[in-house]
Amino acid sequence: MHRRTLLTGAAGLAAAPLASPLLAQPARAATLRFVPQANLAALDPIWTTAIVTQMHGYCVFDTLYALDGQLRPQPQMAQGHDVSADGRTWRITLREGLRFHDGEPVRARDAAASLARWAKRDPFGQILAERVEEWRAASDRVLEIRLKRPFPLLLDALAKPDANVPFIMPERLAQTDANSAVTEMIGSGPYRFVANEFVSGSRVVYQKFDGYVPRDGAPSGAAGGKVAHFPRVEWQILPDPATAAAALQAGEVDWLEQPLSDLIPTLQRNRNVEIGVLNEAGIMSVMRLNHLQPPFNNVKVRQAVALAVDQDEYMRSTLGNDTSVWRQCRSLFPCGTPLGTEDLSPVNAPPRSLDRARAALQASGYNGEKVVIINPTDFPLIGPHGQITADRLRRIGFNVELAETDWGTVVQRRVRTEPVERGGWSIFHTFGSALAYLNPAVSSLVKGQGATGWFGWYDSPRAQELVQSWLDATDPAQQLSLANELNKLAQDDVATVPLGQFTVRSAWRKSITGLVKGSMPYPWGVRPA
Image 1 (tube, helix red, strand yellow):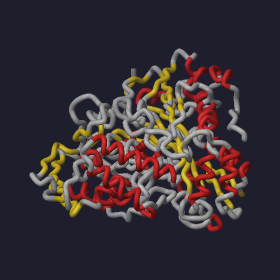
Image 2: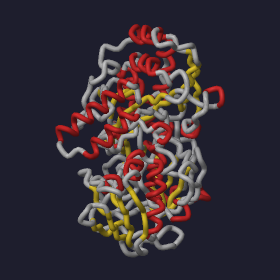
Image 3: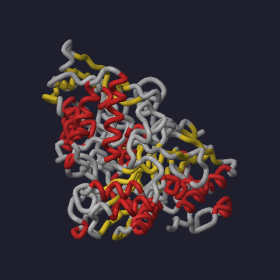
Image 4: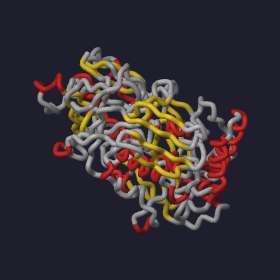
C-alpha cells in the first residue's frame, strides 16, 4: 500500500511561486480565482451527483427553495406558497422579474419541467414523484403541484442542498431525457457560464449576471441574498496539491477549496492566508460496490469486503494523524446526528480484520472473478482510498485490477452497467456532505431502488418499504426505530461501505472576505476585503 506523494516538500512552499502567473494582475480586483476539489468533467448537476458539478450548478442555476444555515427551507426563486386544506395541492408563486441568462423570463412551466426531470434522477425526488399526480403551470408565475396524497416533506425536497440539487433550468433544456446530460448551461443564478472560455481540465469561467435580482437579507447557507460581488469568477483546475498551495501563497489564486492535510501547517504559517471549515456538517467517505455484476451480486462476497475495511487506515491516508478533523463512523447515517447509530450490524461492528475477511471470502463462493476498482489519480481525498482497497482485497484473495484515471473518467465510467470485460466496474470511492446522507428521505446510500437508484444499484424492496414507512411515521420514537432497521439492513446487505467521517478545511487569502458557510463553497457573498 502506498500513499500519494507530493512533487515538492511542504517546507519549501512558502517561497515557491509558480513559474508563470495564472492570470493578468491588472484584472486582479475584478476576478475571484478559485481552485475546486477536482476537474469539472460533467456540466449537468441533474445528470450526475459529482460534488464539483453541484458546485458549478450553484453558480449558474437557482432553486425554488433553499436551506438556510439552520437547515430550514426558505423561499428562494419562490415568493411563497399556498397549500390546499387536504394537503394535496401546492401552489408556488415565483418572484417577479426572474430571468434566465438568455434574457427569457422564468416561467412556471420551466419549473414544472425542471422538477419533473430532477425527480427521475434524485432519490428524494423519486420518492416525491411517486406521490405527484401532476407538475403544472397554473399561470406564468404559479407552479401547481398536485399530489395523490399529502407529502409533508415537499419543501424539504425542493430545498435539497446537495446532490442532486433541484435546480431550475429553461423548459427546453429540462425536456432533455433524464438519462442524458444537458450541455448548454443557461440558468437564472447570480453568475452565467462562459462557454467559450471553458477548458475541461484547466479553467472554468463565470461572469456576473446583471439581470439577477437577489432576495433581501444576508446570505445563510444556500438561502438568502445571493449577491455576486465579483464581476468574474475563474476556477483554476490544479490537481497537484503542492502546486495549488504554492499558487495560494503567491497570491496567484484567492481560494483553495481542499488543501491537502499535509500542507495545512505550512499554509497556517503564511500571514496572508486564513484556514477555516465552511461545511460544519462534515463529510462522509464511502466505498460503493456494483451490485449488478459478479462478484458483488453475491451478498456474502460484499460482506467479506466490509470485514476487510479499517477506517483508520482510510482516514489517515488522506487526512493524516490529526484525529480532530476525522473520526470512525460505522453508521450509514452521519454520526453525531439523531439517526447516526453505530454497530447495528456485525458486518460493520468491530473487530474487523483481514483474517475474518479472508475466511468470509473463502466461504462466500467467490470464483476468482476480476474486481475492477475505478480510481482517480487527480483527487487527493479519494485516490488513496482506491489504492488501499486494492491492497487489502488482494491480501484476502480477490483478483483485483486497479484502473487509475482522472476523476472525469471515473464519473463517466461509473454510470455503466455492463460487466467489467465490456467497460464496466466493480468498486469506486467517493465522499459527500453529511447533509446528503442525513436521513432516509435524502440519502442515496440506503434506499434499495435498484436500477433507478444511485450508481451501484443496490436493490432491496424491504429497504424501499422502510423508507416509505419512515416518511409516513409521525412519532419520533417510531421514526428512530424504522431508521435503525433500515440502517442495519443496508449494512447487512453492504449497500455501501462507510469509510469514516471528517471535516475539510479550506484556505483563502485574507484579501477576500464574506465566505458563506454551508455544504458547498458558494460563490455569492465573497467580496474583496
